[in-house]
Structure formats: C-alpha cells, structure tokens
Image (cartoon, rainbow, N blue to C red; front, side, top):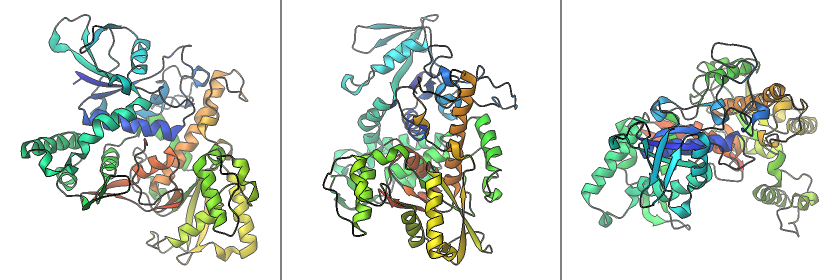
Length: 500
C-alpha cells in the first residue's frame, strides 16, 4: 500500500498564496497521486519554533478555538496538524493510511548518491531539488531496520510549483492519449491505456460508464486544431478530471472546520435546505444565487487593469495612453475596477429563469467580496437612482445577502507574512484565532458559492477555479458544470484546472 508515495511539500508554493492557490495545488497533487498509483502524503512544517507559521499556531490558516471533533475549547493548537492539514483531510483512498516515511536510506537511479532520511527537513531539502531541469528524480528507499529489497519504497518528494511541470511533462500526455492519431499506437496499447484509466478513475469513485464516456468517445470536433495548436475537444480532459476530484470529495475538510462552517452558516439568511450535509462541500444546494466580487490586491494585476480599461472604453471613455500594468493609469475612469452593476447586468442577461423555490416572490443573492462597504454603496446609489424595482429578475425581487463577518473578508495572503503586524502583537494564540477567523470566512464563502444555483464571478483567481471544480459533477455519465456566468476576464465555458 505504501510502496509508492507522492510526498507533497505544502510549503513549496508562492509565499503569499491564499486558500484558493493552496487548495488548487492540493487538487493537483491528488490528481497526480491517483494517476501514478501512489499514496498521497503531505509534508507539513514541523510543530516547533522552526515552523515559520508559529505565530499563527503552526499553520497559515490559523488556529480554531474548538480544536477537535469532540468540541474541546482549550484554544491551543498543540493537538492539531500543522500547515495545510490544519484545514484539509486527505481521504484514505488517497493517503492509503501512509505517513511521512522516515529512517530510510535512499538512492536515485543512475546516480551514485545516497541520502539518509531521518527528519521532515531531510525530505524538504530533497523536494526543493526535485525540479524539471533534473528530470523529477524519484528516490528508491529502504528501511534502515529492514534490508529486504522487496520492501523498497519509491518516493517522489516535490512542491506545488514543480508539480505543475511534472503534470505537464509526465501526467497530462498520458491522460490525453485518446487524442493520438490511430497510426501512432497499436490496439494493444490502446487497451492498456483504457485499463489504466479505468483503474485509477474507479479508485477515485467514478463508474465504468463514466470512464468509458470519456475514453471511448472521439471527443474531437472535425479533428481540427485551435490557434494554440491544441485539439478542439467536445469533452475536455480538464472537465473529466475535475468531476473525478469532485466525486472523490477533493478537497475534504477537517471535522472541526466542517463543524465551524455549519455554525457560521446558520447565522446567514439563506435556505437551510441547501446545507443539510455539511460534510461534503460538493453537493448541490439550491434556492439562491451568488456572486464573487474580488477587488483588493487583485486590482493591481494586469488582467484586471486591462479588463477595467475595456469596460470603460465600451462605455465611451478613451483608452489609456500608458499601457503599463499600473493601476494609477486607470485614474482617467470613474472607478479603477469593474463596477458591481456589470455583474448584475451579466446575471440578468444570462439567467435562464430556471429557478428553484418558484413559489417565492423573492430571490436571494449572496455576495462574497473583499470590498463589502463599496459594493453596498454601489447598490444603494443604483437603488436611489432607479428605484427598488431595478433589482428584479425573472419576475422576482432580489434580496442581497452579505457575509456577516465583514472585518474578516479580506484575503488571507494580506496577513500571511511571518513578521506581519497584528492587533494581537506577539500573542500566538490570539493571532492564530484571528487568522482562523479569516480562513473560516473564506471557506464559508466557498461553501455558499459552490452550492448556489447560479454563480457570477471571474476566472482570474485560484479561488474561482476551485469553485468551478466544486460545481462540476457527473450527470448522465458525463462531466457537467452547473450554471457559471463570467462577468469578465474569461469565458463561462472555459475549462481551466484549479491549479493553472
């Protein structure tokens, strides 16, 4: 069971990344581990002063007050896992019950080098050097207490950034084998490939019928290629993969996180029937719609700046003279962001009025945003100018719902630097609880957005891509995504993986 291990170093990611980024790359690690028939084991920071997140109780996600599944309230984090494992639980179908392998002597095939593995830091150094330019070397390890070669362990220790290249070079080409020209491989190789697809997909919970819908359909429209020299697919590989992840309940959250989300959501005025099974983020909810309006630091990024310019040019404003990715160049426009009204217009324009709770005269829309006060002002100003009847869709009046914890709706990476100042100063416990409150607020938003009937957002962030995964599932044996409207920045039908 543990003879092949993908040891994923959760700290080898962009230093300022938030929940969407970390969960997205965990989803990639889950995909790679499943396809290469390996146990997925997370390499987390140590539970001591060497942990750079010690100020937050050992994790970038902070420390919950209730810190176990029995409801204990001692407020410490000593009993909890560190790092990503503070909020993510690796299901046994992926972990196979394996732990970080230690007390090993390891070698790299065709290299005259030996590594003694005794600690987490030993593996971290190896993961740091598992890179594309070195060919992603795997280690063949033997337990120092057992000289039997039959008990060798093969370990790929790697971090998120390089794992993306491993996916591109090693995994994706094999998954896309069905698109090869028939002349390039024999029937036997095709059968072998389909058996491999069946094996790992069914382990992740897919049915044979769902696998065959992908492996046995041509899936190519007229065998033509698009401008990027890629096959134009009728049934996209990414769509299939994210439906598999959804079926396997990736990501699965720790029980204390699930309990806290349940308590939190009870304070929000949304249909309770949408949240009857909080152990699964992946179930369809219903009875409300949702929007994700992210501003904050994302306004300084090139795509946001260019999209804002495009928005105002469509409304008669001039183009920028200075085309650099500098937010100051947007000062010629009424706002340096795409206004809320544009999200609303896209929601009305693309709404098919196939709404649940049809008997109700009111449709609730949950707004997840890191700019709550500004969005509320925008809504108030539009209401003053046009009357309350402006907010009507499908003959229903609209009620906007916001997250009640407005002070915690800022994005995590704005607080993540280990030397960041805090209202709590050097108080590790208080800092950890503050950071966990921000984490919980983001996860509640993720839960509510994932279960909404219609989601309106953009495709710029990892958060949005994780949402697409959570909204994609198998129906009639084929992966399908519930209604997503891209207000700007991308195509509503775009099928990007959560780790892109």
